[in-house]
Image (cartoon, rainbow, N blue to C red):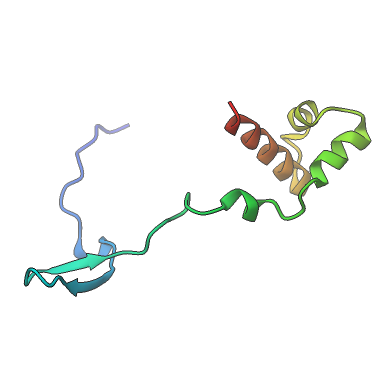
Length: 94
């Protein structure tokens, strides 16, 4: 593994672009960017397509949600995704 060489010069084509405007009290253009981002807003509500579906699966298996999520976290497909998301969401309460 190579040692880090630092950031160096960033090419202008790689810089984020936003709208530019001129403030009333100055002549320099100022870049404006959209607010929010990946972590902004209600991402949890958007991530859960069918609320309560994983809980129903856990109850049908006769297990708690936490133990069912731990058992099925490595499962492929939708069940594994639901289990990993359940584990992530359980960490948010702590």
